Amino acid sequence: MERVNPDAHLEKRGAMKRIMLIRHGQTDWNLEERWQGNTDVPLNAEGLMQARAVAARLKKDRVTAVYSSDLMRAKVTADVIAEAHGLTAQGDPRWRELNLGVFQGLTWHEIKARYPKEVERMHTNYMGYATPKGESRQSMQDRAYASLLEIVAREPDASQTAIVSHGGTIRVVLLRLFQEQQIEKRSISNTSVTTMETDGQTWRLIKFADTSHLISAKDHESL
Image (cartoon, rainbow, N blue to C red; front, side):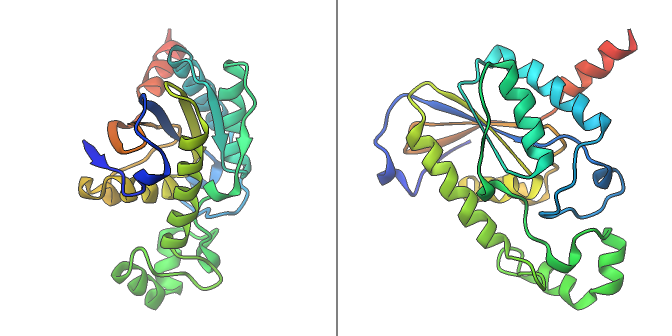
């Protein structure tokens, strides 16, 4: 999938740059299916294993820069990846997960039971709705997309940049770039790697939410 970048004026066409959007490793709240939002929940033991597995997988890609959300679960995942490449991860709060306000810490069942009207509003206005005490997906998309364009402009031709963020944040950035892919309904698992390339004018989606490194890690553990 290739799409013309509507912000092409920000950078002239050059050699392709590769961007890898990586979701953080697993947390206990992921296991409990609690909506984390921007609550600073740490990785659990499985999440650390996943971070090591994705770092090992990315060694062959010669990552040249690592950026991440400043929330612990993303930062630690990014630090593991960066260390494997002799780099230092650069934190940016614009890559944080959506501020879910009153929904944070609750399961989907609890949210539907306590806030049925808010759930209905969210379903009818996916991008524009802001939860009470929270923010809209449009706001999250705007901040993360602005950071993405800055990174693309900053990194040199033929660079391979890893950005560690969150499922919701990655999803809305991809929706901005590849609207026709029905990305809203596709799963973005922990430490999945979504690979894109850009020359500053067009974006190509190379692979969506790949988790093959986790299968390989599990197979290795069973030997």
